[in-house]
Image (cartoon, rainbow, N blue to C red; front, side, top):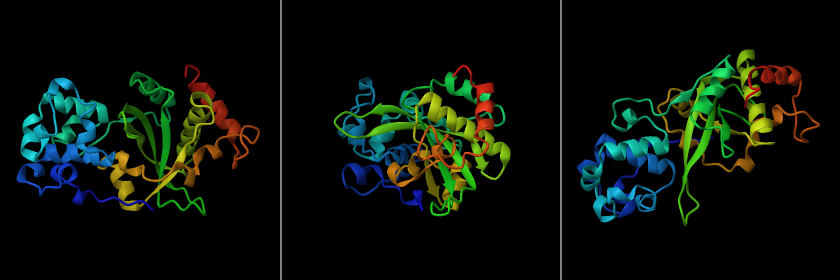
Length: 267
């Protein structure tokens, strides 16, 4: 079971230089920029290769909280918000809502339009199910969140990638038929139309972490710490046995296909 604790975030100096923190590190904007890097397992030294050159950032210029704070302006905040797909108001601690989300429950045409308008209908798009207290042995899927992810920047000479993440709506209930209908339709679109036989991992998240994610108070990138190969996969539930040897629970799938065809002919 995954669990995360952001009360003990590493500070800028300890990650880059091994120094003790100063009072400037405790300022909201510095702390939240650091949390973005930590959630992607990045150090400032690695980030320097992708930030705009006109900023003039060097290791020396951001060597401590005070100098980093002095380097942060409107352009810097906009870049971090856009690159990591987080709300700028959250960076400035003016809001607790970290991510935007896609809407479209019971109206999948709205969801697909929003996905397209945001420029997320890309081959590299990923879909993930974050499942509250999920037990893979019993496949006990109950409450869950649907997350879409898109790579923003690949860092050269490393295996690091900065991903943007967004929820589709908030909390879904596997035992609520309309929720299940929409989830299976979107999953089939992803796995068969958008990304042929694309993998949709089911990642277990404990109750407290799940609620923070659902409420928009936790960085979605913190949930990606387990290899996909070790996880159950949701696409097994939305494929016919003629399409995949892993297919299971195919009852009612014809209805899902009909429903999907009625709303996503353009995607």
